[in-house]
Length: 140
Image (cartoon, rainbow, N blue to C red; front, side):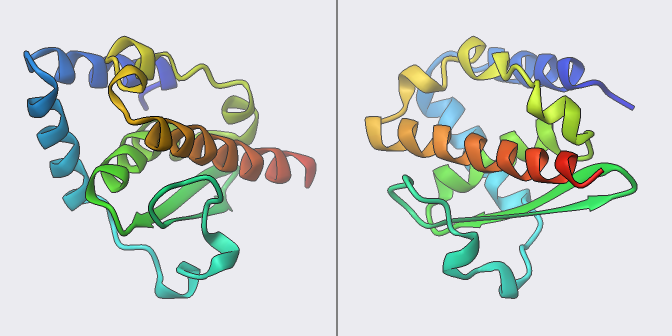
């Protein structure tokens, strides 16, 4: 099984083949298309992320000690960004997610290439995913 660092390094390597941000955005859009559907029962205000310009829903479940995320967004770029986060954070232990260093975001230049509203949304998505991990960790 790949570590959090391995997965982030894979993403950095994949993104390094693109010379400009339009190509990177297109890649992120392709990732969005591959994101598994979230169950409709989670597309409610209870699961919606505050602070995002677009609508984003994230759910998490603890399965065999690992956090499993599902998510969706009404904006394709945002959906691609959440797909990247899920790729890194899915099937990890709550403890690992609480302590996670998402260095790939800086290394691929994502934060600098997002609008301020999208950058705020990214922070809000990460915060919510970590809050799920904190809640699962507290249940032990």
